[in-house]
Amino acid sequence: MNNIDEHIQKDQSEIEAARAAGDMAKVRHLEEELQGLKEYKEHHPEDSHDPSPLEVYCDLNPEAPECRVYDD
Image 1: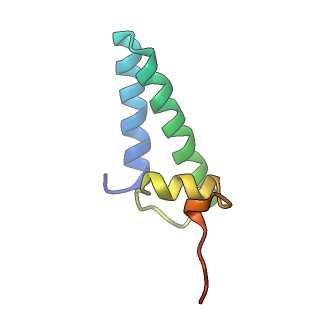
Image 2: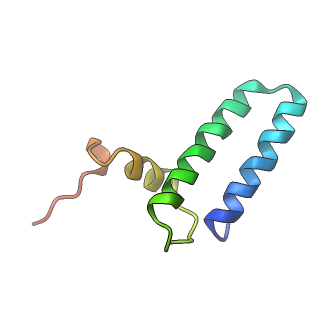
């Protein structure tokens, strides 16, 4: 993806396709991913790059051990 808006749009169309196919597990996964992307976009309105799953996770869970940043 080139930017977060394209990723959001892609996920929305994939959710519709998964619903039509009856793949509810994929729908749940994509809805969770879509919610994270929307929250990331809300927290970073000036940033349009497509964030990695780790960036989204750390944005939503800044105190998680894998997201901690240590200053020397």
